[in-house]
Image: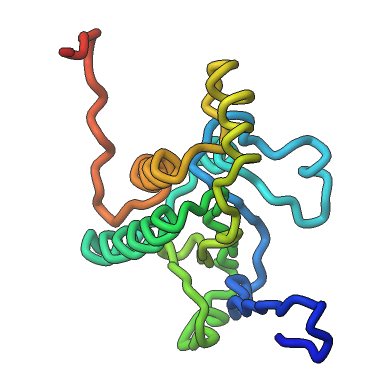
Amino acid sequence: LSFADPTIPSVVLIAMSNFFAGRYHIQTRYDLKGSMYKRHASEKEKKKKSPVYKDLDWIDHNRKVIFSSQQEMNEVREQLRMDTKFLRKRRLIDYSLLIGVHEIDKTNMEYYTDVTENEGVVFNRNGDDFIYYYGLVDVLTPYGAKKRAETVVLGNMLFREISCQPPKPYQKRFMKFCDDHLLSYVGMKPPEKKKGWFKKKR
């Protein structure tokens, strides 16, 4: 927007889709950044009418977005990788994957038959258990001086894996969380746990 008064700077407006504007009511919400450090919803947050849970809550609740095939999962993963790579190249961080969960009412399955979702809504149905709505949010935070200081003081100096990281590590951590804790497909086998101790070669 431009103003008649030249002393007032122009304003850029960005309109984003409402990821939760689907057909079905969302009972549970998650904000996932891929970080494990203090990523539990606080007790105060949990007492809210519509609390937003975090990464460690997602893991504790044993959730997965399960696709019907490996190909479908890979397509979603590749889109997330491309989107976050775009943000990384522009030195943007602090973005999250916002997920809304609708628990399917198994006593009223007719409610879910032949339903067309609203345009622009991204969703996944996990069999007859859950419907997940999701999308990337908070995508405009630059990794500037303030964020660099936060990484150094709260992260490096105190040896903590805090949420705030430089763009490349932030994206890599986010995608690793997606691979390890978020994305799955019907019939996917859990990764084998490595046995014993081993030393990394230098």
